[in-house]
Image (cartoon, rainbow, N blue to C red; front, side):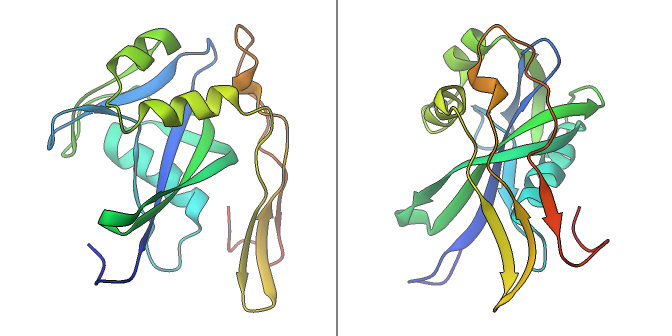
Length: 175
């Protein structure tokens, strides 16, 4: 945890597969159903952390499509970005951090999710558009993830879509 008066940065991922099911994992400790996510490493782009954590926790490769919002947990000193993503490859399974992982229908996922995570899935489903994300060092912009339509909000339709435009000013440094 961060030192008193400071925050750590986290990333949470709401990933969908081609039929509109959402990815959840049953965490080992504390044992509860969650959305994949974790802390951002120094030098790592926050959206890359969402993709990395999903793979590490569940074994599924996803591609972030956009930023939905930010969540602050003052008593724990955590500020986390919430990202919507699409399944690229891999099947969910257990890991060192997860007892189990599954693709679930949205309604089932909403029933299973721990109360801390349920509003995050609801926010993804309600958001018509994603938010802009800019990554910079001082005045030098490294990358930006632009605003686009959030296909996850269009219930009943195929959720996969292209990533909101990612503009990198340092080629090859950011995915």
